[in-house]
Length: 204
Image (cartoon, rainbow, N blue to C red):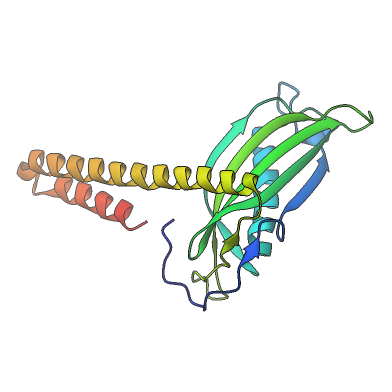
């Protein structure tokens, strides 16, 4: 999820409002689990759809999901719920973006009923060109105190992602060395496997 060298010049800055998007969907009987509530995977796809639209609108072209940083299911979604997903860009790097999504639900046939907050998520997207290579995304203009708060929280999430990745890589590298020492009597096969796993993880 690190920002690779972009394939295009830096575009003009854009506000969060320029790409902010909302999608709505009525949940039907084909989308429920054995408990009678909507599958979490259905909600996750809905979240990815609206976040992808926002990422594409902000970046001005294709963007691919790199990570779902966090997904919280706060209340069940049921058949007949009219579900709304609100999304906006919270943070941008050279080629990547964090998109925040808030999911609300209300009965499809009851006007005036207060919507329930059913889920929240944060996703990371990378903008790509027609060859699948990372491309530059517009800088983000923070217009409101809420924009600035969300941007600051996104910075915290990003620092945690990077720190977690470094810690896992270090742990795997250490484990590979220990396994390699134990496997010297087995023609080094285990050592090679441990080193290959560490290199593969480091290269992601």
